[in-house]
Amino acid sequence: MFRELLLLTAIFLLTAFTFAALAQRPRTLTQDSGEAATNTPTPSPAPSTVKAKYEGGVFGYNHKMEGTITLDDTNQRLVFRNDKQKEILFVPYNAITGAYGDTHSVRPAAATAASNVPYIGLPLGLIKTKVRYLTLQYNDPDSKVSGVTSFKLENKDILDSVLATLAGKAGLTKRGEVFVRKKP
Image (cartoon, rainbow, N blue to C red; front, top):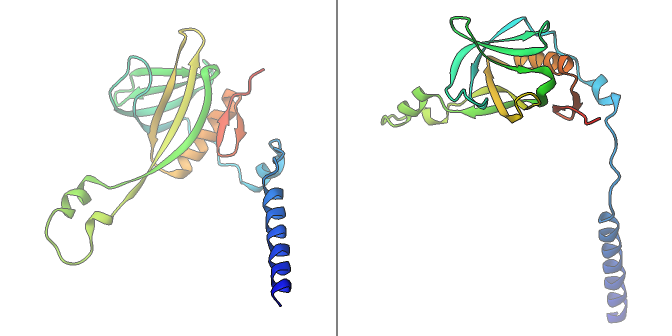
């Protein structure tokens, strides 16, 4: 009886170690396939002008600003204009090395203030909203400046359409959820 139990335990441990060893082998990487692209619907083309809030990141422009972004096809660049439609900054299409959409859940200021008021009922501190950002990584060959900048957009549909349109015009390739420029 003891010998059978010992044999059964040895077989079980040998099998477990065999499966653990097989699980540790290196995996082969697959290239980007068109199959994933066919499963996800392409967003509608971006409008010519989109309301946005500049969040910082471009050298020389440190302050957050409300305004609009425009995809300027004639000059091959993304342009940010302030509320008075004055051109503030631009990023050339050929300088963009990566682009992606980002989402953050934040608590509005009113909910933060209301959570400090004594109240029995719905906990107002749990209220959160989603904020959508278009984040660009750039490397400008003319000025030798590189960095990351972001623009806060209104909603997911606008973010997806601006991101897809900008990536197409800038010649970026989709890698999962982000767009990158392949090196030649």
